[in-house]
Image 1 (cartoon, rainbow, N blue to C red):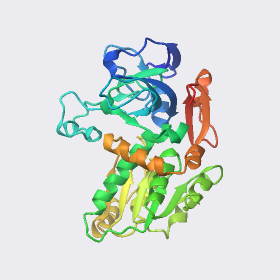
Image 2 (cartoon, rainbow, N blue to C red):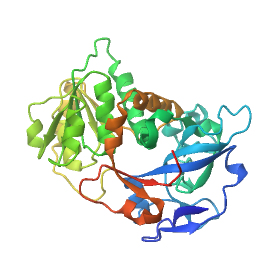
Image 3 (cartoon, helix red, strand yellow):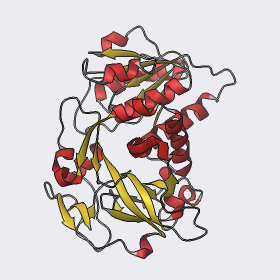
Length: 352
């Protein structure tokens, strides 16, 4: 079978090659790949910035945003041939730590976890792969190709889960205005889950044209483009930061309402400096009872919450997030950044 592989930490080493069928020891479920989402993490791996192959191997099968169809499932597994599934990315560490042992491997305490297609385990960028039933999540077949959005949606399901847990530190928490910074796939899925909760939605992005403004407006939200100054009078109760751009991260910490919650989901580049009055920021956070926290990855419960959110969403709206659908034969095109891109996926050519 064919798979997209890379030599981690070696730039430009990505290729499509023949690899052996997945070993039965990898999981009881044999899954046929339908689609694979491409994200910034994949680009960073192929550029050689990070990533780790399985122990004893030189190459890593890339890809962590999966959508597949079960080909084989043993009796009692909870799955049946023909069902659509997505594979959970992270696996708990072998020790395990208290978090991993409690099913919260997204909060691993010692960093010894592995991740499909990223760290120490082959990913889902192959024509067939195997899954352990405990790390497979069923997807509503009615979603069609949009089921490939489940993994990024799980990140936002976790973000909202933690926002709400923090918010209920008070008995009177009642947010009115939510701001999402960044209108990439993660930002737009954050916007979707905000709209589903009935909050006033605002989305900020640098891009003023293309599909993003209409995607936000069709959720009932307000789209802001340009510089942060356009948000000066907004004072949101909740901010979900999805850009990782340091000026936006710092700026939004200082432009919220009282008792605000800022959730950081974007990774910032290292080595860039921003002028900051740390004392003033500290005073604002303390005197206004603000909370700033980071969130990444997700556990099984968050995948299930994300599956529910996608099932409630308008399928046509979800499919508009997928702006490029690249066949496996032209796989290289999927890793090119093009104007107007929101989410690019690789279509493995299997009939839906």
